[in-house]
Length: 162
Image (cartoon, rainbow, N blue to C red; front, side, top):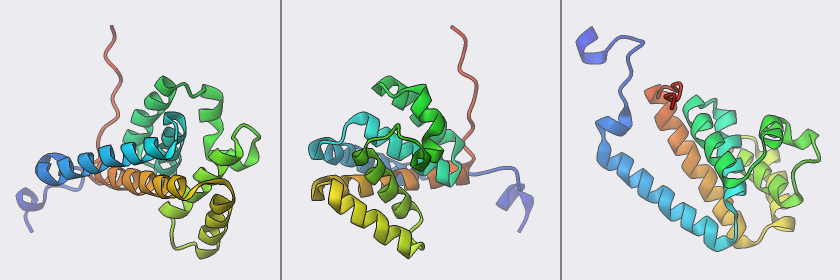
């Protein structure tokens, strides 16, 4: 394969731009998932915590940047955002948030069957069926966006000064 056909190792295809109809479908799915989450009673802060935790696991810098700003706009605190990666080791998250975060992690790493069973059992004790479904859909959707951004190497740039 030639460099012009495959690009160099540092060049990436922005798959969202290369295949805009597929990306639009993902964006539409995300809109439907936001509606499902709202209908299930998940507030925006909880949705953003799930988005951030999944993006941390996947090491998606672009989505971490986007969803940190979204979480702050939704009213999340910098203190809780700072310890989100170690949420199990704090008392800063509610039982409902903890159940959602564990379920989001299990959705992101489904090969860990024991963690998945434990997360699901906790979710069953804490969340409604609608909330469980919504959390799983939020996690599935952000996982898809993480893959788009990671494989495209979407850049995180400094915000323009005002």
